[in-house]
Amino acid sequence: MIDFELNEEQAAVEKMVRDWAAKTVAPRIHDLDRAHKFEPSFLKDMGEMGLLGICIPEQYGGAGMDYVSLGLASEEAEYVDTHLRVILSVHVGLNSMTLWCWGTEEQKQKYLVPQAKGEKIATYGLTEPNAGSDAVGIQTTAVKKGDKYVLNGEKYWISLADVADNFLVIAWTDLEKKKNRDHSGLSAFIVERSFKGFSSYTMKEKWGILAGNTGGFSMQDVEVPAANLVGQEGEGFKVAMFALENGRYTVAAGATGLIRACLDASLKYASTRQTFGVPIGQHQLVKEMISQMVSDYDAARLLWLRAGWMKNQGKRNNRETSLAKWFATVGSERAASDCVQIHGGNGFSDEYPAGRFDRNCTAAVIYEGTREIHKLMQADYALGYRTDKPRRVDLPAYQKK
Ligand SMILES: Cc1cc2nc3c(=O)[nH]c(=O)nc-3n(C[C@H](O)[C@H](O)[C@H](O)COP(=O)(O)OP(=O)(O)OC[C@H]3O[C@@H](n4cnc5c(N)ncnc54)[C@H](O)[C@@H]3O)c2cc1C
Image 1: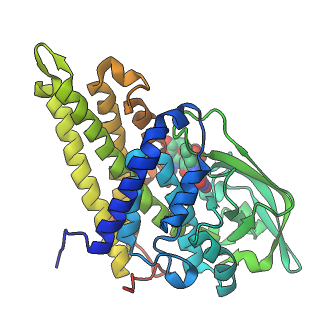
Image 2: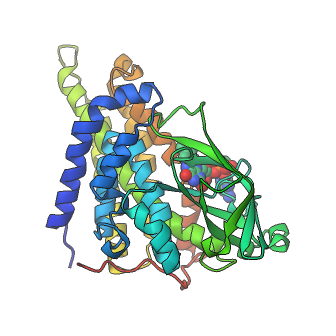
């Protein structure tokens, strides 16, 4: 049975995020974006609404909602500004959902519960100055000394780097395997900002998602308790890929929201701006741009909803999530570029939101698997070069309360 209706709980989440973002964020986002300012009170609001633990079970401090609700919150957040959705991506999708599935009970009590309640903020540290798509190219090491691991390395392009309290960090524990680029030498750790030897910074030259915080962090002889190893030693690559499967789901839903934002702004402008005696919406070539946004929005939404439905059912969805992320992010780039075009010269001014949409959409075509990586994945699935093998840990099906 296929059901295209949202249930009551899903519709309520969608409305809650939509209303909050419209009332609280939309009136301020122009100024925050221009000032490159991250607004911490938005995090507090998101925590109070239960969004920071939206699909984490109630027993771990979360709201216990389904995965479609996470997608809806992501779509509504990015409709107003990408940086809000990035918070959901890194804090919930990449970090908290991973701790919930891979973490020990002790880790869940110590880290997941406060994260799900919004008392602590979390992010994800895989990328380094010389390795992004090529995850096994990272250089960070974690050397075991007694009941601790000593971490050394630099993480770069990290969302919420200067905001988060807890970091899910991927590092090499087997230095022989590092030499051979064998990913079974990688492990995952929870690193706290408060650990000695940890320092972070905000990137100043970023040109998009300006109201968001992005930066890097450095670990110099950071002693991490062995109890903070996530999964088993050597499972870091699997943990990292598992995390991405959930993070990129939120990116897909968020980019869908950005397409809708471009569409709505374009509809408004095209109905009022006149050229040659008629509203520009009556010109065929403007209609073409509008209709492309309409088709991209509907297709992107159906693709992420399918992935969310599969997550709810406990079905593997790596292929479907990758497709949803690739399609929605590329669609959002097209929509943002056309939104600028429809606004003509005004599209080139920050008096209108089109330019912000255009600056914000690009990063999502790069992070959580670049456009090229997703293209390759889709071809490999189609050609039979890639299949999803059984995993020791999977995302559980949604259990209705
Ligand atoms: C705003 C922002 C926020 C981010 N937040 C985080 C975060 O919170 N945590 C985190 O860990 N990372 C984060 N990242 C990093 C992001 O995940 C990486 O930038 C991304 O994975 C790409 O890696 P790279 O930048 O090293 O590019 P590269 O991997 O060097 O790629 C450069 C180009 O080469 C192409 N390419 C690479 N390999 C292949 C191949 N095999 N075949 C075809 N083409 C290829 C790529 O598609 C791309 O076009 C963020 C990035 C941005 C921009």
